[in-house]
Image (cartoon, rainbow, N blue to C red; front, side, top):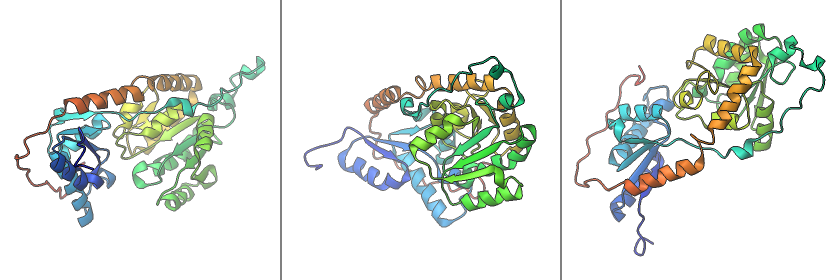
Length: 330
């Protein structure tokens, strides 16, 4: 095929395609754009403790330094990539992930018909939808997603808002461990492990949530926050990585520091205490999807990056990757 056609650009996404992408760049002479979605150090809490971890890190370093243009999905990832791979952060382009919000809409909640139903009973203060609160967290069930932290926060949340339940949607290697953590915290009956749920069920689940809690310890971007915002759910999220850029504290949701169980509990309680404010933040989060995270804008920015990228001097030698021996996140 390459005898009759040459690409204008080669775009590599993460280390798995580094060898093929760099070979294509050398074969065709086309400039190489590389997107680093996450790093091996980040996925393992800052540690490169095993030979395989260090090998993956080395390939990531090679790809980042061999590329003619480098992309990350958040400013937080830009800083991480620059620090790990010895590249100039001013030369990294941040292109956020996007979402088509239309597919995540849920039917509006019915308007109360009587004045009596509008009275601010304790139950209504607890949940934007009336009744006892339902919290939802979803995604891969791995340590870095931090579900253990919202489980640990649940006893304090239930003391402030009795009856609160946590719905956990997703699969992963930590599912059994998370159930054990719920038992240890004496909230196992208040935690429902849903496993995998299809898109329709997830949209319905998010639409009924009093709050969606995203407690990640490590999160390069956090597309789950876009999905929850598109469904109109109030957001409570950690400030890990890109989540801090997607969920603006006090504007589009409430935030807490990664791994801060007390902070997680306080943020959730604040969201449940004032459902009116939670709904206003949810509206602001959904409106932002049409500007900062709209696919047409992201596509245009990507095309502009392709157009301005030029091949660097192919004779410039690359150094050797720096392999951290301790925790790179301090």
